[in-house]
Structures are given as C-alpha cells and as structure tokens.
Length: 235
Ligand SMILES: Nc1ncnc2c1ncn2[C@@H]1O[C@H](COP(=O)(O)OP(=O)(O)OP(=O)(O)O)[C@@H](O)[C@H]1O
Image 1 (cartoon, rainbow, N blue to C red):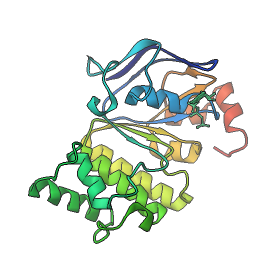
Image 2 (tube, protein in one colour; image 1 turned 90 degrees about the vertical axis):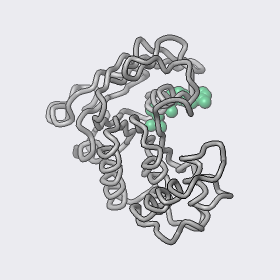
Image 3 (cartoon, protein in one colour; image 1 turned 45 degrees about the vertical axis):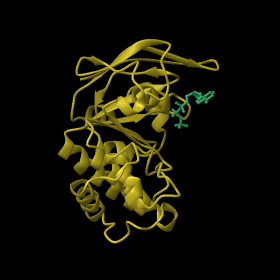
C-alpha cells in the first residue's frame, strides 16, 4: 500500500491535509479545482516537497526522509522533463544510468526497444525540440517504462495534447502501468479522462484530500462539492 499518513504541508497561507491509502497496481485519478493542492500532494509523494507533519509509506517502508531519486516513484510532468541538450536516446539512458555513465549493450537494447514500442523508432538521435508534443510525451513515457518503478505519478502530463492523442497516451500509460503492476496517480482537469482511466478517484478541495472512491460510484452519485466542481462539464 501507499499510505499518506496524517500529512500536513503548508505554504504561504495554504495548507494541505491528507490521510490516504492506495493499493498497489490501482489506477487513481486526482481531481479538484485549480489551486486545491493536487500537485502539492504528488510533490510530497515524489519527495520534491517535505511535509510539516505526517509520513509517506510504501509497503510499510517510510519514504518521508528519502530524496526523490531513492523513492520507488516515477513522475511525469506536463513539460515532460526531458533534457533539451541531450538526444532522446541519451535522455533515456539516464533512466538506467542516473550517474550519466554509458549503459551496457543489454541496457542500450532495452532503450531502443522502449523507443520502438512508443512509436519512436529511428528518432532516438533527435533532440526533444525536434519532436512533436505527442512524440515528446511518448519519449517521457518510455522513460517511465524503463524505470519500471511501482508508483507512477502523472501531473497533467498530456494537458497540451488534443483529446484523441490524450486518450491514446492514457491507453499507453495504462499498458505500461499494468505491465509493471504500478500504482498510478493521474492529476487531471478532465472528468472524461478520469472516468476513462481510473478505477478510483481522489477528490481534493481547498487543501483537503478526500478518501478514494470507486470511479463509477462517484460520478453516478457525486457529492455536493464534486457536483459544484464538475459544473456543467457533462460528466
Ligand atoms: N511555490 C509556491 N509558492 C506559494 N504558493 C504556492 C506555490 N506552489 C503552490 N502554491 C499554492 O499552493 C496551493 C496548491 O497548489 P497546487 O499547485 O498543488 O494546486 P493544484 O490543485 O495542483 O492546482 P492546478 O489544478 O491549478 O494545477 C495553491 O493555492 C497555490 O497557490
């Protein structure tokens, strides 16, 4: 289980509170109004922000004091976080050799296979700027695939893509997560994405992280606060 226990983080007058347990392998959407604290929750789980109080545990192990690179977590951001001066292949090498060393031939083959799988065969020598937005998203997902960590965090990584491409990317994420048996948390502003992707939904409002609810049950009978958030989005 991923357990976020008695967590409290404050920043410039904003406070986030969470108490949450999520099972390995689940697909979870994190939704809620702008500024509610969704990114902050992911940042604390990933280790980019330290909580004032509380702990983050994975399978009983306390991660709270660990730096991001030592956590069992891969994170995908909207800007895809690829190094602009490195080729796509070299960006992916870093997933296997964070020290910057040259991967061995077997690792290089894995990188080439990940590129093929993401439809980027033959594009490994390009710099990220020489790829389309969708191709950059696939390159970033190839990195997640190579890292093969048991928790995948996605902070609106595909928001800049059109609906069809976004749905396709979420399908890819689902396949990658399933293969790795990874728990996946997806921050999204699009209820359709949440419904299509997630088995459970965590609703965050004004710094309060609510307990996860089965997706279908939540959207079939949304509580008042969620109804207000969804407005007339048709979800
Ligand atoms: N670096 C910062 N300095 C000060 N306040 C911040 C900082 N980052 C975030 N905040 C505040 O913390 C709160 C939570 O921000 P967060 O980015 O987690 O919200 P969010 O739910 O992800 O919003 P959005 O959906 O708009 O991305 C917001 O009220 C925001 O103004």
